[in-house]
Image (cartoon, rainbow, N blue to C red; front, side):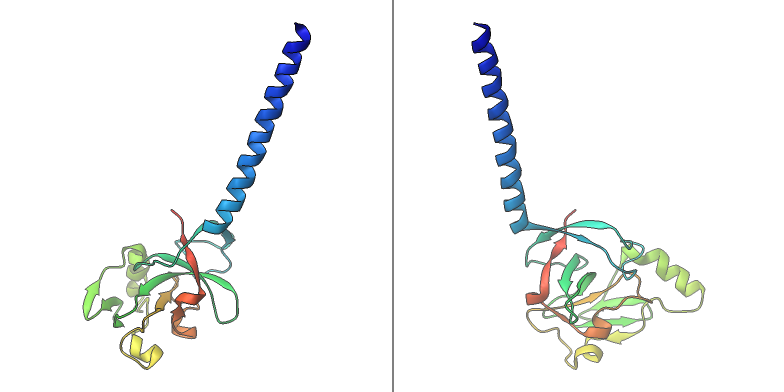
Length: 174
């Protein structure tokens, strides 16, 4: 009787461990198809993200304005930047106001930084248009205009141009 109890407990323990191992392996394998973990490198997304922040990236190819997108840049480095312009849109910045198809759009995530910059007599985001960056007024299909939240120091579409959908990895999972 005592021997059967011990054998039963061992079997339960083995089954529990086996279930845990299988669950862990499935989570890792399935998760690698849908998610990626990255570490923020640099200061281009301050104040939203800081150097060294660890982020979970949801792999997908559907993006909306102001999503935090993760992509591979022209130097084959993974970067995080905010999507500002979508395919088919005309983008312009004028006196720190974002215009999408000639309509002003609020950027609530950088209000404090814009106000501080203007108090110091400077624009937070230098004036430009999508045409200045790409020599075409409208962002082509399959491309996105991205900017860092730390506009003065970020390397983004103003430097390396539009980001193709092919170079997009996904967006920050929240």
